[in-house]
Length: 418
Image (cartoon, rainbow, N blue to C red; front, side, top):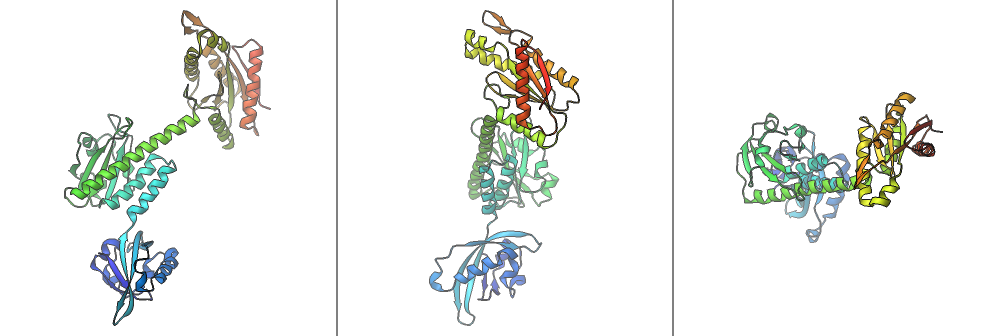
């Protein structure tokens, strides 16, 4: 068991031979020095205060372990859990024994949980998780390939810098998808071998809800096979990987629902205002906003019902999208009202042509039971000027759209926002 013994001044008088496994320091380099020398400056006062509480044998069961960042020989740091117990030596007098244990697995697991709850990207969740698993599974590194689509993984994350560059379409992780048990392989990847790994333990992770499978890989510096304890820990690690994937997918789904129209799938009004406001705040130039309203849409609902009306709205959006360019945005603002954000509009002629394509979305008849119906598109356009806000642009485009309506509909009208 890794431990050191210190006197009341904090001087190390003894260190176990196994201490180097935890803190990287050989016992002879620790003995005779003050323990504060190995604790990062910001935690030294906390360490001294904790030791001050261990002042008598009758308190040996009352103190809980405390965690300190310890400086390593290479200048890095590692969080160590320290449990203190008072001793008494007839010659040396009062002494304190400190039992040391790495706390890296718990630290990274805590960061993983926080990132997952905060809705951080899946890659960030998995990076923190793999660092925790690397410490708890005795690996020199751990990686996760996730989002397999039948041909390639969507991405990779790992406990070391550069793990995200691991191949996604080839490699032993693809082979591991065909195995139910842990697949043990020799390491042939140069980047993984550079960490000192000689053996890999790989296992498929099949998330619930039909999500794509993933593969958890533990890279070890010994060519041994997993024991029962390893297998139990591996199963729990796979559960954590599954939790991260399912939680991330659910978070993405909820965010999408909150920011998009559930019927048509395009952005909703709040999201459009955010997109437009962000573009204006960044100082983007040559912006224009189009406000679209369907002509005679009420007749569709009255004559054929809301279900067919919903189908028509979906088709309208598909047609409007075909008239947009890369980088343009479309949103459903209301029942049969839509807004468009055009970028890189250098002049009035360009936006007039873009608006005409929206009007053309209603040129072709829409099939309905027993025949077809014509539903036109009326468009109002507002060109952005310095000082405009999302509210003024939307309001201007909305008012201009009503001018198109008053003129008979099925047309576009443009004016500069005031």
